[in-house]
Length: 427
Image (cartoon, rainbow, N blue to C red):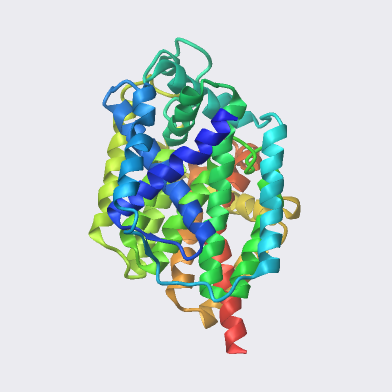
């Protein structure tokens, strides 16, 4: 229970203090504001701890509690300085809200009673968080192969640091103590998405968000929102970046792009996709580059503190792409095949594809262009990664593609909502 309460309290406090200090505009509904603050706090707390770890500052209870404690007086002093984005919800969609909330409540109850069962969370991410909590470092014995099994030693550590903070402060290092953060992040991403889509497209947006909340993939053991994976957290961060970029808040988009870099290897490609989408849509502002550059420095510095990993070095492998072009059709086919898996996605990606075609004629606006550019660039990066990997594509695709596609959930839903709304108006 202590870990649950800390997971629920620490990050909104840090997020609210950050938003008030930076005068970040908040989403249009109360629920989406709370969700945005959670994700903002998750990123700021993790980035702060990541920077301390890279500088070899001990990650003890004082470091873990520093930002939440500082947040309290900041919130009290600047509590009247919150601003809202331009969008507003026209009216409450009660039935759509209930349909949207039901699967989220079910996932909360499932997380409370079902033990952690996913493979990657139990053997990759949560052991890193436990090592951070116990060793007060991102370069301790665990990360030097001296204690336990450490897979993927060069993976970014934002979420293990956040989870490690909760484990340390609660005194509970079980897997179940840490996975609340993963579920809350996934739910927060969906709630922020719903707030914006409802504000922009009224009932159309509310019902599309409700449909997304019922996607089967959310409840799968491997890679779903109930797992201790990073993909749905990455989806939430990308979603916020895209939605805020549409609203014209480039600095917020750049900050969340930086959080993506610190969360997962694919985050670098997604951050670049956000920056390019900003340029294409004429939303780019040079301050966006500052947090992105800082995040890259943190990751590179932290990697130098630990043993080399056996992970594939994609920055090197991408140079072999010209020699591997014959594998591109197989990589593209694998992505299309998994996107069409009804038991995981229902008709979601089929509808996205149809919406893209229709949108080229009826929805030539930023709400269509920004998520479309981000998705196209991200999928291009996924195809390139599958093409150059030393793994067999047939072996890698079943365990990777659905998780990669999950990262694009919010841009996909935004494209659908934009086009459906445009078609409805044109009629």
